Image (cartoon, rainbow, N blue to C red; front, side):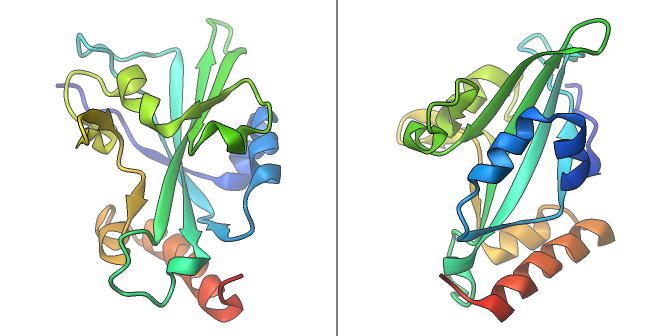
Length: 173
């Protein structure tokens, strides 16, 4: 199976390159603190071919309410910002996969997180897709241990620790 290449991009670069994502950033709930880097991958289709016209950004947030609760399985949330380009690298479609539609406030590119796997999982369990209550869903929430283990790179650890420490200093809402 082809593994999507993973690259890290600063959240500021995402909002600069794709102004559409600015709508998402403005909507962020103040109880969530963004991790300042995100992943960038190209998905594969069900035949295991790279979908070169799509980019998937994994965007991570620390839930301020989960900080200080070591047993919480909901410390870090992952959403997906998805871009489709044409052959001239022009954006032709954007999607944002997150929680319930009510959060979308009328935005047409908002998708429920539970539809992400059917759109982009490829032939295997890419993006942490797994069966939950009879539906295939992506990994959307992580405990602190899972968040730390998801990537061993120093850059990821620094970005995660910065967001976590900010939450600890400021505290929950």
